[in-house]
Image 1 (cartoon, rainbow, N blue to C red):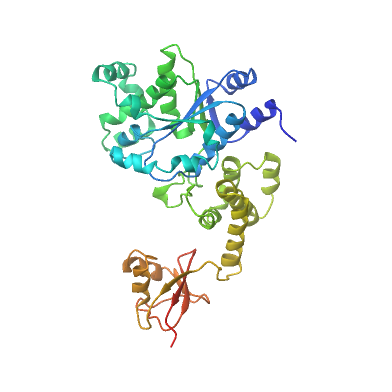
Image 2: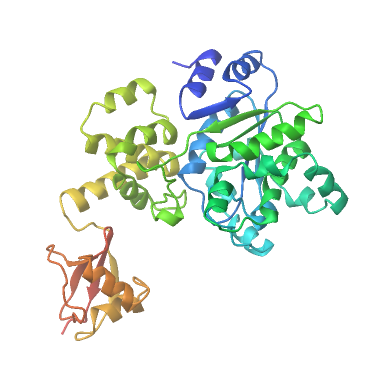
Length: 393
């Protein structure tokens, strides 16, 4: 049964939202009156892949897209060169424009896994930010005080720790705010770590007679409050293979299960309540399957689950095994490095020391100088199986 507009709005507001400015009630009233919503979501291409943090926002945009909103995805090819200081203990590394453009090369394809690309307007903020002259920058900067900028928590933490805060970092929220002004949007959405930047844009627009809703969404965080990301080594990307997505989600702490359902799936709240009463492992398997389904489709989600069950629960060797040639007497470490399975002998040593290399039967490889004596299947790390093939006599 299809939902009414009021029901769709209720779903939008009931999950994954941290705060809406000026208020949820005003935003609800705006949508209910069928007024045109022009909303943008900014992504700085600091890496080549989008991740579940982006997915959670795109799922909210999908609902608004279905309600007829005009969706703008802003690729921050200029702002990424400066680097967003949000939640950072030190200034970001400056990127070249070439690096930034390389990073975002496959963004549209990844976004198309969730949203209707044909109904999205893609823009690049270098088109206007790179054209601002020094006089214009001074005018924009004069709209805010130093006190407004340094009150941000991460700047305060750096000051207390006697770590530097660079002047150019204050320009980031000004640039993001100017994006809103230039685009003339009446809504912006982003993770709640972007609230300061998004509200900066709201302030700038109000001074120019424009009004903008700010929608801050919940973040995907671990039980300690850390964002799931590259630095923590637990990032699930929209470019990951289905088996990797499923396996990474299954490695999450149980405390993350319901948050994952809320912001990274379309499972309804009633079903989520039932899943919350299940065995955590079973609920997590449903979560992993749902996330893979959104990114890769239902068929690959089913196959990924089968792979996980056979490989990690039944301890069976999967059908999909990497095969690499070798000669009897060669060192396993050299064979794996030569084939690109591992980056170095040092990585092999770390894996062996941690029990991360094993024979097909489950026995760990303990010898750093393990030689190849016959065709053998090895498990490398948590998810990879390699069949080392030697010539038959």
